[in-house]
Image 1 (cartoon, rainbow, N blue to C red):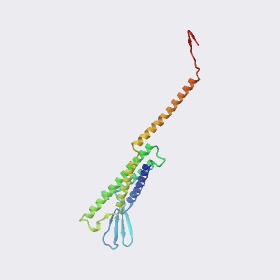
Image 2: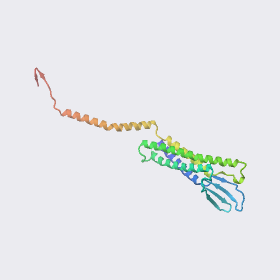
Image 3: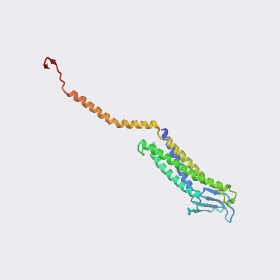
Image 4: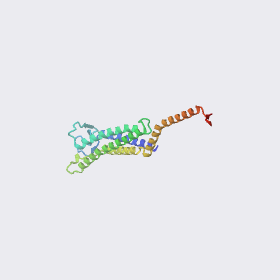
Length: 237
């Protein structure tokens, strides 16, 4: 019962992590510039994401530009795109395996198959969490390094945006869900019980067959006439 509750908790944490990672991948505010400079249309905030760059002007205009060219992007941005997409894919695969490995569900096969599915789901969630941590950490390091560089003008300095924090939280949820899923798998004692029950179910028909043969032999012996031999000299009575 406790392991089932742990699996449900892990499933909820992983589901929140998948949603967070997906939202963070699409958000345009991976880094935010608080001071862009003064123009005819003064920009209040400029944001850059994995797929688009957005600018919010003081006049209320909000415009976004998609990043069509992949080769022109810096290396950390290309890797962030790739790892976030892979993280979302691995997390979705983990959800499918987790749905099969939950003890409170009827589908998924035997206890052994559910155990393997739960371990696979935990591994997928852990890998997805690591894939979330890599771009978030690298992206944050690049933004902070550029911000602390004195050669970079003030108008070109950025700060980590909300999408980075969402990515860190999602990675933590995925890692927690994966670890809980792996720890909720049955131990050796339950494995021994499964093996005993399996072996018992295998030999039980043989026992029934042997008992039936013994009963038939007893009935056959009872139906046979009883011969008494009395020896008196050379005669048999």
